[in-house]
Image (tube, rainbow, N blue to C red; front, top):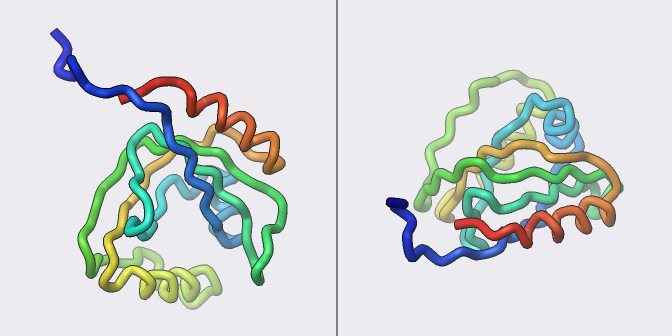
Amino acid sequence: MSQNRGAVLRPATIHTLKIWPVPFDAVVAGKKLADVRRSDDREFLSGDLLLFRCWQRGEYLGPCVLARITNVTRHAGDLDLYLVDQGDDAASRAGRRTLSNFIGYPAAALSFEVIAAGEHQALFDRAAILATERRL
């Protein structure tokens, strides 16, 4: 007997997210498979789709990555995060600045698997098809 008997099935939600070039490149290379996002304006659920759009200086740069959330860990305000890399390179400094955006806000730590990288419209169309797959 299934434990999910009577559970409501829903299509996956597509979350379009801005991402800076350095972490974007790490996602494309398979070196970044998790992200922390404020969750006061949306509900991230396992199985939802992430459409990362490369963003810099107030504009989208073109490339995108489509990923599926594999795990969500929720945190109430004042998320305690510790940087593993305390280097003085640009990525480390940007990461420390970004962490200040979470003070006092609920956040979600998202693990994800990359599905594809490429042009925005093609990936959005693919995400729309994948989102219609029913899931818990």
